[in-house]
View (cartoon, one colour):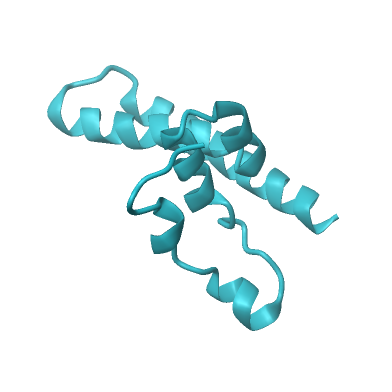
Length: 97
């Protein structure tokens, strides 16, 4: 366990959907998953929010695509987006059930 003066959990935003309606949104767990990644807990991060492992490469690829000419960039971006949405919705459905 990481002990520090400032913990990432102290600065996380609460889920407005969960506070107002009492149910989680498809994005619930993303902040905690990133925090777990920074702590080196990769399996726990995946269990918390599986789409984290497609969203991070997607953001990195979008950033790299701005600076370099990448062949088939649109196809790769669309594939990563579709996979991310499938993982988000699948995780959301499993949380509801």
